[in-house]
Amino acid sequence: MTARAAVFNLLAAAALLVPPGGEAAAQVPPDEAWRTVETEHFRLTFPAELEPLGRRAALLAEHAYLELEAAFVDPPDGPIDIVLTDHVDISNGFARYFPSNRITIYARPPVDDHSLGFFDDWLELVITHELTHVVHLDRTGTPLGKVARGLFGRVNAPYPFFPGVGVPRWVIEGIATWYESALTHAGRARGTFMEMVLRTAALEGRFEDIGQAGGASPLWPGGTRQYAYGSLFFDHLLKKYGRERMARFVDAVAGQWVPYRLDAAGEEAFGVPLSEEWEAWAEEIRWEVAALDERLRAFGPVTEPQRLTRGARWGLEPAVSPDGRHLVYVRADARSDQQLIIARPDGSEARTLTRTNQLATFDFLPDGRVLFAQLEYADRYRIYRDLYVADTLGHVRRLTHGARLSQPTVGPDPGFAVAVAEGRGSTALVRVHLGDGSVDTLVASETGVDWAYPQLSPDGRWIAATRWTQGGHHDVVILDSAGRLVHEVTHDRALDLAPDWSADGRWLVWASDRTGILNILGAPVDTLGRTGPVRLLTNVRTGVSYPAVHPDGSWLYFSGYHVDGWEVERTPFRPHDAPPAPEPDPRFAGDDGDVAGEPGVGLRRRRRVVGT
Image (cartoon, rainbow, N blue to C red):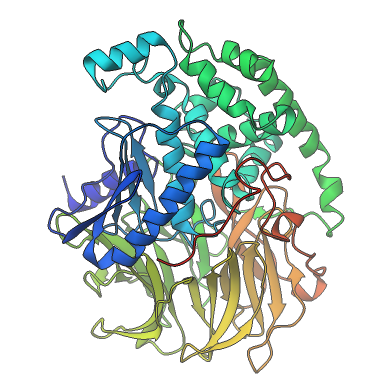
């Protein structure tokens, strides 16, 4: 197997939470200096360099245990193992029930992730999610199951040993995703990404039925479907019938003598068969999207983008070269390797610039070459991001080795780039010297602050970036070239991501879900690096992100979300004609609400766990 293929296979497995009982997504490095902390209910193991995070994770795990005990069902007896690791530059976690209850957490915070990005605390969110799996899947309700476990132990099988394992994955992931949101102040069921997945499916005629949503279909949205359909269907059920019914449902499934009759379990817990309630829920969503245009017109005209790709699936980060000749974007169509694609600015004559490991991030050098970051093996156990340069013919040269750098950006000086440096569960902004690959720190890593999507202004004076701060603030800020904060462009709990500059440096554009739908916002920038009134540059039905302005200022490019994935699109760039951006959606107004809008069991007594 080639190194590139091995990386792809590993990441394909790690991209989803491992199915209960499945193989581990990746082997943690055996050569670390591992440490273990024991608490009342957990054994938490971590490398010595992650000890502050490890001890904090132990506190968060105990807190999540108490929350789930109060709000869900009784957790299992015996210690639960948690491994915290930082050997792969991705954000993930997974849980297993066999041969014992165990959880693995990747420390990297998903600041750049549209789906996972709505979090107050990455460790809190992922631990709550994975611990919900442990609590749910360990449960057995029949005497037969208890006797079978007593005689044969923890057999890696569903009924009667672990009946929760045999239900559709939308049940398993839906429950965990709902509790990740109900027991924290953020989470995917509170955010806008999962809503976008279902809204788009309804708008474009492919809202899935209860049988389809549990499948492992290669059709978009792939592995996301179980999280999106499951969490928001449970949100519908619990709003309608009461959140205490979740425990009844899990116990109904675990206690069935004739297993896996979901309709019967739904009728016992909610008073209605799940398949019947699913149809009612789907009809509600269809009615909502039928009236969507009327709601959108309150913000301004509905945007009808020009689509430049078909079947891109992951058509991300479109950008036009400084000379205006080439459009480059990321593509992963599930039929070939992930690639950087180069085309004409209208999307025609597309060809592969280079294949990449996973989805790359990139920027143009002043001469038109492409500087990009991709994953590669640092050794047999560690996979880190490094920087590479590709010319227009696809010849690739590696710049760094094991530097853990991503999201590079280049200004007018071809000798250096700014990038995000990752490691130890934190991020920093660094200056990379492109001649020798050496790195200088611009903004050091700091507890409670993380960075993503830096973008140098065309004159090199400013760096726009997404800054996450404690409390779930995902904001766009402007720094000077030395890394000092100049201006906060936004300050709210909406996701504000992927800023970019117009070629004259007079406008800053970025993606934001402040309307409840991912759109592109823009604001004028003065000579002191301060922005003026924010404008709504798009007003779409589905969702858009990764904006970039054509060098001549004629077009605004972005990735548009559809029922088959992300496609490259564009619309005329006319910021002066755009309406003012509305205030953030009410869901972003505070941090004390709940998924269902009312505090529930375990939330009224909620406290934050801060520090180590």
